[in-house]
Image: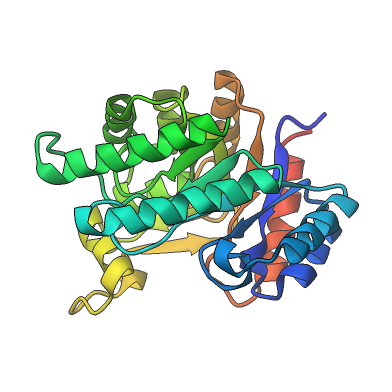
Length: 285
């Protein structure tokens, strides 16, 4: 009996959404995740007819929408002047998720400052609290993806936000690649907040300031910064995530939701995704 459900990020196939749904089903996925921040899936671009068509295609294959990605990019919610627009856009994405019978929207919020007395920390708390309360009103979860801060710093931040609608999308590879944190111990640190996970692997090549890394994602153009020098995303089992211990930790905290496979790099995404599905299934028997 499988302990976890296996999902696939549709965008990882790098093909159209209808074809990606077919491919996810062919691989034996039980759920899918899709970006809803631009293109066809953006709420403002998605007609009611097309939304129903996509939902029906997923259901016809016996799958569900495991999560929706609502990452609006940039500096997350760390810049006060940008937040009114970003918060409203995020609320529309949460409403779309519920129309797709999905309770989880994942995102990046920007780097949580280590100084909890600074203005940027307060700005983040207020924005995430509003989004978490809105998610809670929908009986949903707005889930920050692990990565730019250690699990301990993120846990304190979650406690300060203080709403059960603001949760965690646990990505073990991001922790390994960016902060060098132990993703197994991190599961226990964040156990009260994990509502969804990404199945991804990688390794850190050189330590860097996470703020510098995420500023590069937000803006680009940082002199002398080549991300390939700092970390490497790998197919599952080829990086530094100890998946045996990681899955055991999820088991121990009582998480039996989705392991949604995300492959952001590589020249053969379909092959890598198929490998990842097999890899995860083999570790659940």
